[in-house]
Length: 213
Image 1: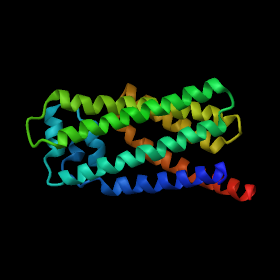
Image 2: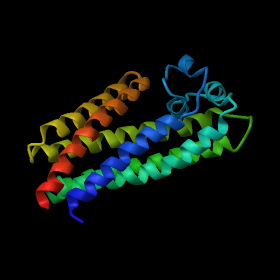
Image 3: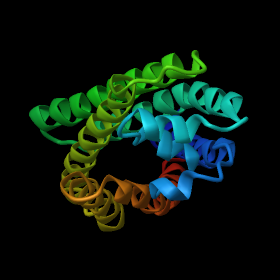
């Protein structure tokens, strides 16, 4: 199997699982009170035990658990995709290892965030600020590391004159940094930006696969 075909499959699987996770996000009547469009993202960004209580005050707790378990597969997919792209497009050895390392650390934070969520879902009451901060801090660290990874990947893509893909990743990086400095709720804008980038990416790899045949 060619490298372009592998990256195409990983891109399509990442897109598919993004949509699946969006559909699995359990409905919640109070999520808008916290400033988020999906309950799963509201759970990531809880600030304290009252906001954690609001997010989990729903009969859809099993939905959160399923969403979190599927997210482990999503982490493996997007990690394989972006690290694979880094290995494919980064010319310098130093850049390759730095960007791959950023993605790997972002994946680790994502895994630790999921474990923090599962620990909270295992209890019915008695939430603490420490529980909320554990979820939020791992989530924010994840986004920042992935954002810097996308910036480094964009640099590698620019050397191959892949402007649409590089622009998409730079835009996603810009959203992450802006949200980090101002309002974390803006991180929700990363998802549509990345989805468009992944769609353009799938077209590119599909063409490369045809060319390589």
